[in-house]
Amino acid sequence: MSIEDRIHWNERYRHPRRELLTHPRQLLVEHIHLLPRHGLALDLAMGPGRNAGLLQDRGLQVIGVDISPLAVQRAKQSYPGLMAFVADLTRFHLPTNYFDVLLNFYYLQRDLWGEFSRILRPGGLLFYETLTQDIRKVREDISPEYLLHHNELKAAFSDWEILYYQEGWRSSSHGQQKAVASMIARLPNG
Ligand SMILES: C[S@@+](CC[C@H](N)C(=O)[O-])C[C@H]1O[C@@H](n2cnc3c(N)ncnc32)[C@H](O)[C@@H]1O
Image 1 (cartoon, rainbow, N blue to C red):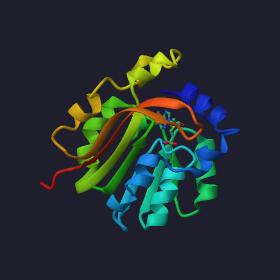
Image 2 (image 1 turned 120 degrees about the horizontal axis):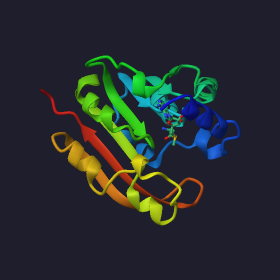
Image 3 (image 1 turned 45 degrees about the vertical axis):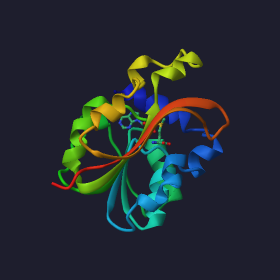
């Protein structure tokens, strides 16, 4: 991860599709009742803030991190209460026992997974969704490195309380089909 990622993502956010700014991820919307009404949340690779904004509206304080300065700027414009930072997650140190909710949508950095149980408070919630290898049936251009293997996510968090898990094809917000794994998991208390 690097300057190239920063440039690449900034370009993508220069003229974003409208839903990218306004429509929170379906997994979050459908399971909003699981979220606490206060506490601190972290949105990893937040993008322009649509998911972080939903959490903030719910009553949580939200810290959002993204490598793209333009994404962070757009997030702050749309949701002035957000604490949003430009940072490269491959080089970022996250504090211990700090967050009540963690969002990881459409960003795959496997070496962060082991950190999640350290940075979340016991009982904290993880919302995770990203593409699986199946997407290559329709999008061969996506590198397998950025795609989950079948059941990989579930296996990696098998010692957590899995509240929701699904793998398969879903409609994206712009009407195309995407192959994803979606998970909501709770870090066990103690
Ligand atoms: C597919 S977008 C997902 C954005 C958002 N989570 C959502 O669901 O709409 C991937 C995001 O990862 C960010 N990103 C890529 N590499 C990163 C890195 N090394 N550190 C932090 N953010 C990164 C990009 O800027 C982009 O906003």
